[in-house]
Length: 384
Image (cartoon, rainbow, N blue to C red; front, side):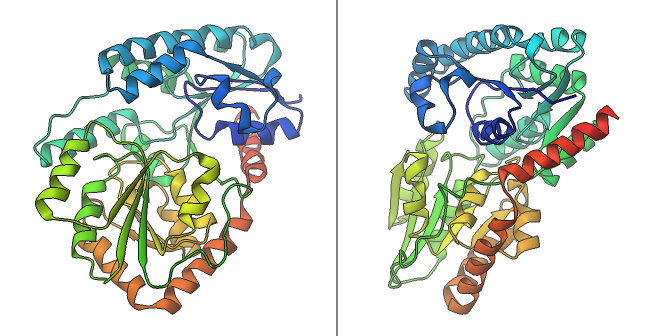
C-alpha cells in the first residue's frame, strides 16, 4: 500500500523539511501547523498542502513576546484544540500520521479507530525528565521555576501511550524514555537544509576569535555556563555573538554580565532562518551548553557552515559530533570543560581547519531524503 502522510504540529520546527521530502514522493496529504501562512510562504510548499492557523497564532506569538504568559497559556490551549479538529478533517485520506508530541491528544482515539498508523514525535527528552532537570537547574541558581503546565504533560503522556512508536532525534532523548519505562522508541538524527546552510569562504576575520551561541537565551540552553567560560577565555579580540530571543531569564543573565563585567558580547536577537548562515560563517567556534535538548538543530546548522562545535551530552548531538569529529562534547554544567576546549581551538589553527573540513564532509552524507528512507524502513518493520 502506498504511504500517505499527514504531519501535525502546533508550531513549525523541522517538519516543513520533512514534508518537502515526503511531497517529492507524492505521499504528502497535508501538513497541519500552528503558524500563520505569512510565516510559512517561504518554506517551499504550495498552500494546498498546508493547513495553518492565522489570526490567533499571530496574537499568541505577540503575547509571548510581551511575556503575557497567562494569556499565551490560554491561547495555546485554543490552538491545540483547533489543531486537533483540523487533523480530523483529513483522516480518510491518509494511512500514516506523524504528530509532534502534544499536538493531538484525544484525536488520537479517532486515529486509532480508523486504523491509521500513528507516530508520536518527541524532539526533546521525555517531558517528565525535561521538567525535572529544569526544576533542578533553576534551584541550583536560586531562581523560581515555572513548571511545564500539567495539561501539556497530560496530553503528551497520553500520546506516548497510544502511539505505534515514539520517534526521537537522538540517543540522549531515547535514553530518557527508556528510563521512564517506555521502550517503543526509534531514533533518527535530524539532517539540515544545505541550500540554506553552507560554508562561505573567507568570512572569518582572522584577527578576532568569534564564538557563536544560537538558541533561546535561557537556563535550559545553559547560556550562563557559556558566559562563565567566555569571561575566563583569554584572547585580545574575543567576541561572543548571541543569536536568539530573550526569555524570562533575561534579568538573571544581565545581572551576571554586569556583576562579572563581561565585555564584547553582541546580542543579535532574532535573525531570519534564511540569513543565519552569514552570521554562523563569521564564527571560529559554535557553543551550545544545553541542560536539555532532544537534538538542537542549530548544532547541525553550524556544522553545515563548517564551524567546529562545542556541545553538551544533553544537546542530543553527541553521537554526530563524535562520530564525524566535528568538535567536542562536554558534560552539562561544566564551564571549565567549555573553556578547555575553547583554548584548544584558539591555540591550534590546524585543528580548527581539520574540524571544519570534517564538518563539511560529514554533512554531505545525510539529507531529508535519507531521513525519510530511514523512517519508511522503521514503519515497514512495525507494520510487518
